[in-house]
Amino acid sequence: MGAESSSPASWTRLAGPAIVVLAALVAITPLLMGGASCGHDFDFHAISWLETLNSWRQGVFFPHWADAPNYGAGEPAFVFYPPLTRSVCALLGAILPWPSVPAAVTFLVLAGIGLATRALARQAMEDGPATLAGCVAIFSGYVLFTAYERSDFAELTGGIWLPVLLLLMLPRRTPEHLRGDAGSQQPAASGSLWRNAFDGSAVPLALVVAAAWLTNPPVGVMACYLLAALSLALLLLTKSWAPILRAAAGVALGVGLAAIYLIPAAWEQRWVEIQRAINDPMEKIQYNWLFARHADPTLAFHDSVLYQASLIAVVMITITLAGLWLSWRRGSLPGKTCWWLPLAAIPVVVLFLQLPVSKFVWNLPKLQFLQFPWRWLVAVEAPMGIFFASAVWTNHPRRRRVVVLICVALFLAEIWVAKRYLYTPCEPEDSVPSLLSSYRTGVGFDGSDEYTPVGADNSLVALGLPDACLVTDPATPLGAPTEDSDTLFWHPAQGSCDATFSAKANPGKPRVEHWLFHAMTRHAGFLVLRLREYPAWRIQVNGQLVRSLPERSDGLIAVPVPQGTVVLAVDWTTTTDVLAGRWVSALSVLLLAALVLLEKKLSRAQL
Image 1 (cartoon, rainbow, N blue to C red):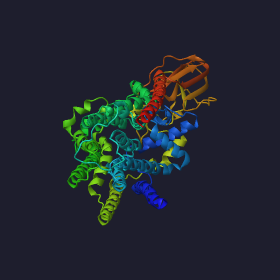
Image 2: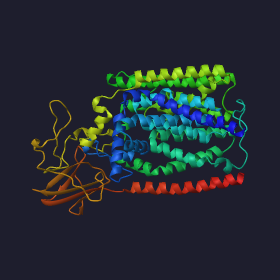
Image 3: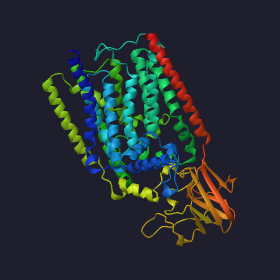
Image 4: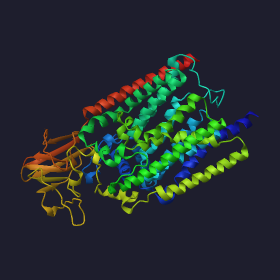
């Protein structure tokens, strides 16, 4: 009898997650049928995966410099582009064929979004509606928009962390019930303030905050602001300071754990043109209000994308609020008031942030770096799934089957819409095999404007440069445009180099962070390297440290050298800010371990 009763329950526990995973598989059907969707950011992300794996193979497991951008002159992309998503994709690239990586990572992230939303919903809902909530989150318009139209895998992953953050902050379901009185407030939890604040949630909360920052800086910003707002709301609803303490500990330790990336990224912004990320009119908050239109014809593509995002925002927020209203009318609101009310506030606040009236809010620290107000839709994915499920789910078997069939039809219709309007087939030169071929040839790719050294111009970096070029004047332009292209090309017949030299292997040192040249120069002059200048490079000529370099408009390193034998070494160094980040992260690990012990002690004391 006991075995018979446990078997269906065990199957049910597996069935819900399995359905969510199946939904994620269905959601990537366009990728399985047509290959990767080359959205706005696809090239940048795909190249970063190749660069990360290349660095690993050379023994650099936390790379800072990317070789391929600027046609092999490189850029400090990995100082500023966080490591988590690109590392996962690089790992997938090491074990799977590269063309299958975009579909694989999209599947994993979508499954993670659905499972995280389902776990959040299970705090206040039964397994069936919670599973439906997870599926709805996968098929929410913003998930498909980010996956297909934008190909922003890092931001897409934020849809995993925000539901988990909500799960760790909202009051937990008690063992005695799945649902509470929707109209009543939950009183402050019994027990000491410290026991309620550090009930086992603070440690995973810190890990989630760290993961958000290590995935995508805009997601990290949203996570911290969401935590602040949520903890204040819970203070008012539960009359307890425990959420404030838990959130403060989670943010402090989470940011500390991510300091190995955050401190260098923040400090070294002064060395590059990072402001270009938000100075482009298309990437300023005031140019991206809901359904905004601009007279400038050059912004036509931007306006088209903004229209799509705005339409998705209206649909998602409308569905969420309609689900909330219908759940209230049916008396099916999930959980206690202090559980569902913060979730209900999220779409309202996000709608407010889409409108010009919210302009004053965007002056808060770091919010401008979100660039697009509609990025906040990532926070609506889980509430939309939960309130939709609570509105339509029924315990009547026949009606429930009808609801499920209608939802399946809607999901399939969404896939058709995504394939028709969001999926972007790759041009031959942008396909994964083409990018991989170009990467292996060493030709390189365009650079990123925001990672350009201060005062340098990416458009002046020539294609096909030698590793080192001997010149008399350090400002000598290298390369020239052709009749068919404005891109600068270099070839020996131009005569801009008196001699050229190739980099040699530096025994025991990875090529990506160490350059070595042995040259016999016919005259004193300057060796212009196919390498962008950056303060982390340490340059030695014949064993002597070079402390001053002439500036070039293309940002390449020009090293003064004597006539005769020259041994030139360029090595990436660990700067003070990188050391500071490592120490702060190490200290945070120790504090996190102490918090683990504290939570265990408080848990035992409660028992």
